[in-house]
Image 1 (cartoon, rainbow, N blue to C red):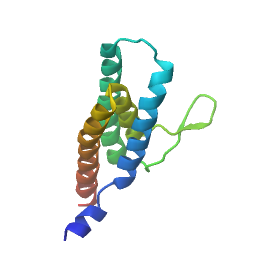
Image 2 (tube, helix red, strand yellow; image 1 turned 90 degrees about the horizontal axis):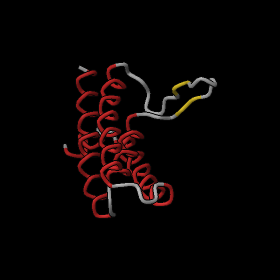
Image 3 (cartoon, one colour; image 1 turned 45 degrees about the vertical axis):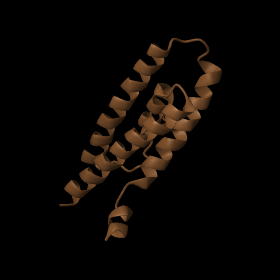
Length: 123
């Protein structure tokens, strides 16, 4: 029974967001320099909130997971909700311990939200 429930969870988004969060966390150290922590936390929080809003819209509009949003040059940009939340978590985390804790919380909420919306859409 638990095995069937776990199959319905959107693991793809969680794994993708975690990879993006780790990448953002380590790249941040090279790019940001001496930026104050409150700016990083503020920008990361905004990205996380926008990511959850985008996740709701993706599920309402039934947009595929790796969708390409056309930009002004006609090429696609892979910026889905999992990417937004992953970038936000990578910016908010100030050390590796925070990265792990915030990742667990944010990605669990993202998986619950996407799974619940999938169940609601299928009914």
